[in-house]
Length: 172
Image: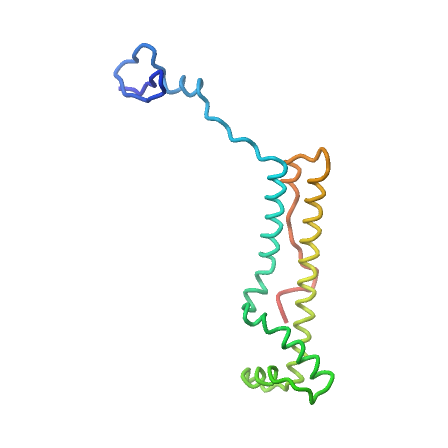
C-alpha cells in the first residue's frame, strides 16, 4: 500500500496508483510550500531597535540582581543625606542613621555616607556607559533606516553589543 494524492490534493492510501492521482513527491513538486514574505526594511529596523532595548535591559541585569528595585528607589534619599552629612557632620540623616544601626557593621554614619557616594559614582558611570551606547545604537539604526540603499540584511547585520569600560565591575 502506498500514499497517492488525489487531483484535489487529498492524500489517500491505495494498492496501486489510480489514474489522475500523483505520487506525494510529484504533488510536492507541483505545489511547493509557499515561502513567507521577507520582512520589510521598516520591520527589520523595528526589530533591531527592540534588540537594542532588550540588550540595554540585559546589560543592567547585574545591578538589578545585586540591588532590588525597592532598594534602588531609596538611592536618591541616601544620596541626599550622604551629601548633607559629608558637608555637615551634624546634618539630619535619619535614613542613613537607621540603616547604619540596622546594618550592625559598627560603621559611623559618615563612613556609610562615603560608601553611598562611592556607590553612586559607580552607578552613574555604569548608567552613563550603557545609556550612551544604547543611544548610539538607536541613532545608528535610525540613520540606516533613513539612508537610501541600505538593505534589510544590512540592518539585521548591525551588531548590538554593550561593553563596559575597564574598571566598571558590578558594584562597590
